Amino acid sequence: MIWVKGLSFKISFFMWKVWKAKLPLDDFMRRLGYFMPSRCWCCIDPQEESLTHLFFTSHAAKIVWKYFLARAGIKMEGLTLHQAITRCWTARVLPRMKPIMQALPSCIIWELWKRRNSYKYGEAIIISRVIYQVSSSLQALVRVRKLGLSNIPHKWHDLLNMLENYTPRLSYEKVIWEMPREGWVKVNTDGASRGNPGRSSIGVCIRNEVGDVTYALGREIDETINTEAESVAILEALRICLWKPPWSIVDYMEEIWQLMSRGNFKVTHIFREGNKLADHLTNYALDVGDIEGYDFWHLDSIGRRIVNEDKLQCNGYASLPCLLKESQIVVSVSFTQSIKRKSKASRGPGAKQDIMLSSICSCRFIRRNWVRLGLKPSHGKLLGFTRKVLVQ
Image 1 (cartoon, one colour):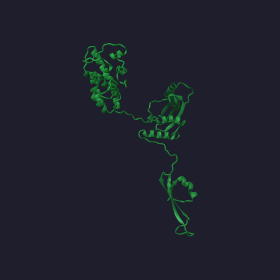
Image 2 (tube, one colour):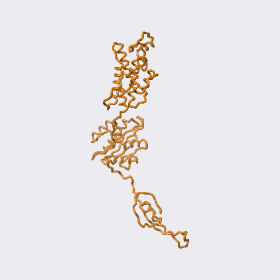
Image 3 (cartoon, rainbow, N blue to C red):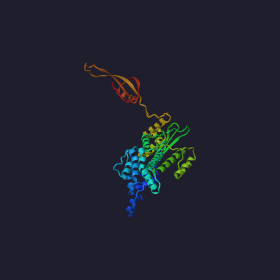
């Protein structure tokens, strides 16, 4: 609470000394055993100088504290110095106003201390000047913490209103996987370490200019830290692109630069949202096991979904592999067969009933079961993709 980012260190350090009651005032000297006449330099009617009197109960201190606390909705009645400071630190305000309220007691106490020293050495400073200096310090703090703000008001009341009604400008950046240029392939890499150091893995995926996967790898490596896992992933990707296995083990980064000098590579940083497939392969190696493949169907279901999503996001272009390896064409076939069955109306020996069977089934089921069922197809019609069977 004392150390507020953007507030001068000397003000924060002075506030720490006040909070710990370590200022060399008359009451502090008496605690050390030095007894001497005591006089407050700030009051017209001199009183004994003490920490509480100088910074909270004196005439000037009351006016300054009341000016700022009343406009912040904090009542001073019945409070001590430390309680008033704590109320400012714990005030229920918007998150963007928290640092200002936390710095308020430090600024007030600092300006009261400067006024006390000026009076002691012959220079008079009026109370309105103290209020002005506190407001200037708070205005400067807002300017440091809110760089995008302009025309920051100086008056405390206007400053509070501005912060309450301020709507921060949100900045965002669209992050997606993008296809490489024509004639290029794109390699995405990722390295992970759970524990840093801990169980580690790498993920590598290579895709061509239309977004199709030409190689994918997710493999667990020795326990290491994040940066080393990232280096191993880049190194493995370069080895794959050059199609040459390593003949010697050297420092990872030196080999990366050596390999890059032998080809035309472009290395860029990308956020996780644009590197989903390599990130998935990295975690798959830790959670399930090693994975390696050279086309779309060698990936697991989640990896295939990520590939399709990435391709859909690239300029609205979709060229997706078919998700069904074998089409199930369903037709409606009508069969007619006479089945001898006793009728309720006539149970004579020659009575029989014609039953029309209409079923919907897959072609494979029809071919496999026509002969066994003894049914003869009369006509067929393509309906669509379904596996439901309807018997009428």
